[in-house]
Image (cartoon, rainbow, N blue to C red; front, side, top):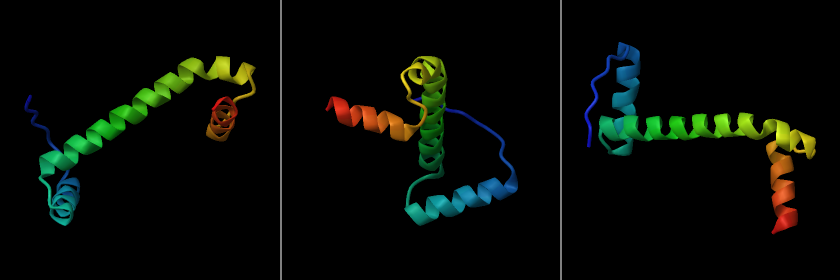
Length: 74
C-alpha cells in the first residue's frame, strides 16, 4: 500500500481525530474511506455529464426518472 503525507488545517485535524475516536478506527482509515467515497462521487458526476445529452433526449432528467425507467425494464 502506498503512503501519502499531506497538510491539513488544525480544525480539520481535530475533526478527523474525533471521527477516528468515535468510530474506533485509525485516522488513515477515516481519510481513506472519505477519499474513496469522494472519488466515486466524482466518477459518477463525470459519467452523468457524459451521458446527460443522451438521457435528456429520452426524457430522463432526474435520478427519479432513472429509477422509473429501471423499474420498467426489470
